[in-house]
Length: 141
Image (cartoon, rainbow, N blue to C red; front, side):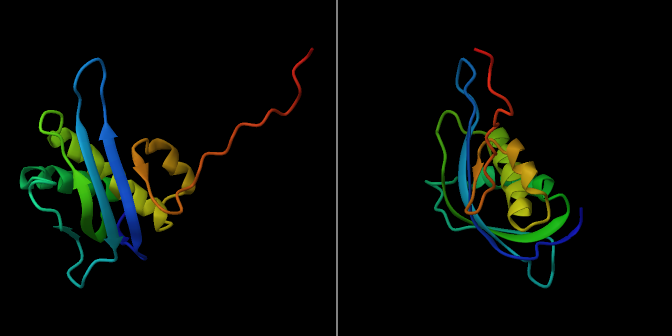
């Protein structure tokens, strides 16, 4: 997929918490996605001080965003987030970027709403909710 993000998608929140028997990757970001400027490509800006999101995680976040957006150009403003001194790592922020990029594509209408089912750590305003499975018949008594 290529092109430009056609509309803004605000308040995409990703909270990666993967604990399988021990400490695992942790990452938390909240970002606003906008159509890119005239240069196109991915523009990434963080408003957070290093005590909230250390600069060492921004390259991994950028890599994940590039993967998640799949060639769609966007301006991304990180407005909130956090890290954990022990559990945060590059992998966590790469996953966060991937999920944030996919969420923005769904929110902008470039991916179908069903694609949201694969985003286990993402939320955003207007996020499609999975439909409950309804029984088509009553169980035998």
